[in-house]
Image 1 (cartoon, rainbow, N blue to C red):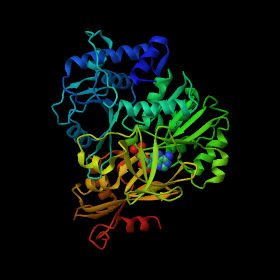
Image 2: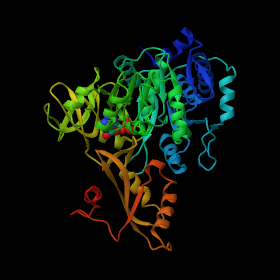
Image 3: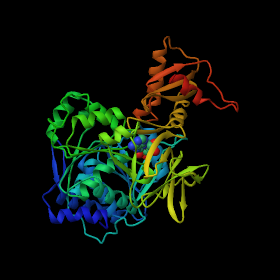
Image 4: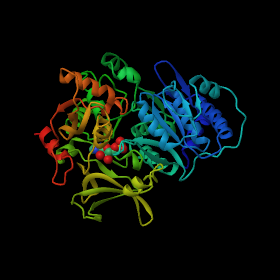
Length: 503
Ligand code: AMP
């Protein structure tokens, strides 16, 4: 494979009627994907001069995919923003990204302050479905940025990870080669497009002539509907966080007997616990279960292991896997590589490492560097490599956590929490169970207030906090204290609170 866009378009030529996307209500063929993305690309190419990125706003609709490809075909990078993102966070993303245009698949909120041109959902559909003047396109290539995904930043400002065509190609080629994926398979598409796990469904599916099967939030949030639909989807490839699988495993009939089509499980984004892995092997003995690992900054994932009974017998904690061929992992202690078996920070070196954070040279310089001219990234993850080249994960060396697979900098929540009008000081800590965050606990020094009960204060704080942070970043528990513990040099002692919460 040489090129992502050409590969997807080739399916439209070879099998125009093949289904690229199938939701409960609608199906769209590869031919439609090609036509719609061409139309929007012609429009963008003629409308936008500068090489600025373009925001695509919505949920898991087909129009999102057609927009992504259209934007890339027109030579621009796309930025997926989920429609339930708080307005303050959207404004921060716009301020960092300076996009040239917003393609809104869902209605764009009028409350957002910006003068960037917005194409409405109806306007977008009209552009997709009407012939546009054909022009020679200059699609995104090589090191040019294909997409930008925003993640939580420690200062409260999201960081935009820039992924080039070369990065995406390196990931997709590996994913298609190493997981037993064949052309025409049906892929679960459950992760929001603004979370890089979604890339593990989208590009492997579309580059192999497969079908994306979106699982909308309203179905996920309704157990009855979820378990009613799951067996009917005829999925071959399952891509999700282990947390989402834990929800599905609550249904007793979710097994190989009732859902026999499932052949491949790919997990990424957070720890796959032994418990989940063991249960999966028991329920789906005919399928292959893969644990994969990687940060958004190295394009979704770059290690994998097939989890088997033998692997579970040998390792207490499920290993994160063997490194993909074109990539190297080094383990650093104090900026120097250590030998096999020794613990340190996981450093990734290879062609899927991003060029850095958009318009953020400071954070880029802190995390990205080169080794012998090859891009490298400091993950902030602790781990060790075995003699056989197997990577083992040992947690974070900073205050980044994963909750249900979502990446959160605890400092990001602190920052927004301290801006809430009822809060004098605050800090958030994770409560763990079997290496996984179960809950976020906020320790708060409250300002004088009129509330009679703490739960009323908590409700008011949560409401105000929700204006600035994603729903998954809102702590589940609030503890009110007179003062927060301090370290010797006067900083808030988060580690002390972490041990208190987890004792
Ligand atoms: P994200 O950028 O959202 O993909 O988050 C990347 C981070 O998630 C990594 O740096 C790890 O801390 C964590 N992570 C991803 N995959 C795994 C895994 N298989 N096991 C444990 N942690 C993981």
